[in-house]
Image 1 (cartoon, rainbow, N blue to C red):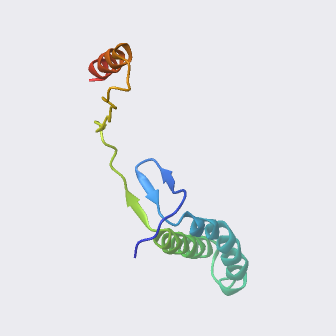
Image 2 (cartoon, one colour):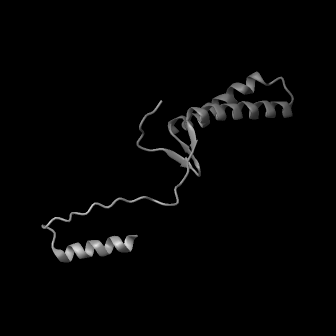
Image 3 (cartoon, rainbow, N blue to C red):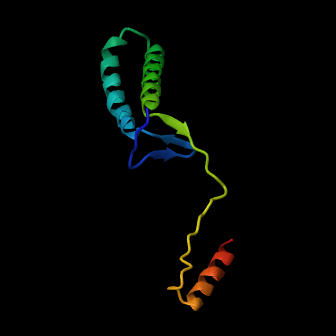
Length: 106
């Protein structure tokens, strides 16, 4: 499934294609904490903390997967194509400047 976006979120080498899903992490995280207060109230304190952390981690991983993460590889070299108008309408002095600029850029 391919789609075009205007912006993508990049965190170091990880890039998210659908970063809008990441907004759900704090919203659903708070909802999970609110619901978990009642559903895990019968457990001991350490068991409640572990159960809540596992639920929040699972939620974050599912939402992170929906955001379509990918590793991006940054190229060290960049390819550049230069198109120069070499017609007679370009003055010879300007043509020499263009040629010198291209030679320096290499």
